Length: 400
Image 1 (cartoon, rainbow, N blue to C red):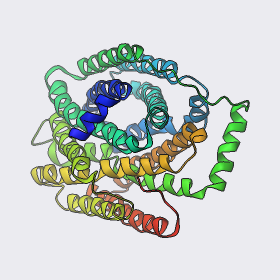
Image 2: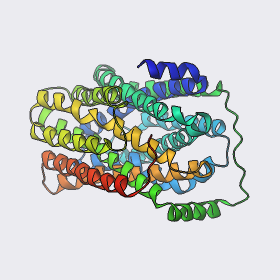
Image 3: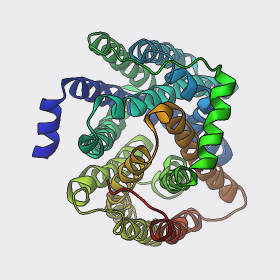
Image 4: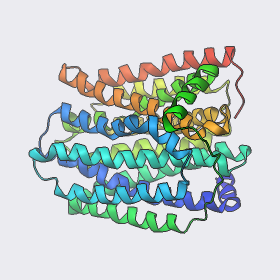
């Protein structure tokens, strides 16, 4: 932990951006728990729940081909301020969702919110290698992951109690208020960069990116490796577990909060223990560990308390897998392409997350158990381990 605090003291811009992350991510979980609680209260089908989860990722997929080129042409601070403002407006509009007839509007609002959030995330992740020295990049990514995980832990746990105590609409208001605070904090950041000016149009920049990926297939392989982490987007699966197994013994919002908080504790502690240990060779073992954690979790899902314990181990490997594979990509691409390659990386990751959410809904509709779905997703990490083993053995990878 001391190494992370030392880096934040050395890099004041990173420290401010990290504080903004903490506040905005923390707020996001209030509305996330509220949305799933509202859907269960409205007695929607498993398909609607999985579509809601998928809608959180679709926006990032749609915009990715354009967001990277925009990021490489526009000053990041102006862009990020606009995106935070858009999140405030979309979150306040969630207050209008009251009946099943409003589900279409809920999808629209989730799309807008997540489009802005995904765009903001891509802008920030392409900004880090521009403002930080290379030896600080992995730790900065780990800080981002730990903040996400910590806010997820506390946000999910607290929001479960908040939604239970005061209802879903107060949660939406709290979320919007925290986004407003983030907006003011970002306004005070000194962030003036000299972007590499390009005379190319947006379409030509997009074509140039594809030519770059063709010339450098390693970047494409690393994008695909990172995408496997998207198989851990379990929000819809956890909602279905709560509905099927736990709703009769504990309030829905509390069960959602406890399960997600347990998994997120693993997300927080994982990089603290594994961050200095992992390297290119050992990354294979993390993929295998992730696979077996999910498979064991599937065996105990009917028992709320055992599921709570195994949720911790499901999250334990995820943050390090995410941050290390992200840093590998950043280290193996040219600066000129940071925004575009990061955007395409996020697009493929979100495609994997969307596939995960839709698979959960599809299997539920076909009558498969939530345990079967978890086993299916966990098995994907065994394939990821083999894939990365081949990449590391046959390609020249820089160590992070």
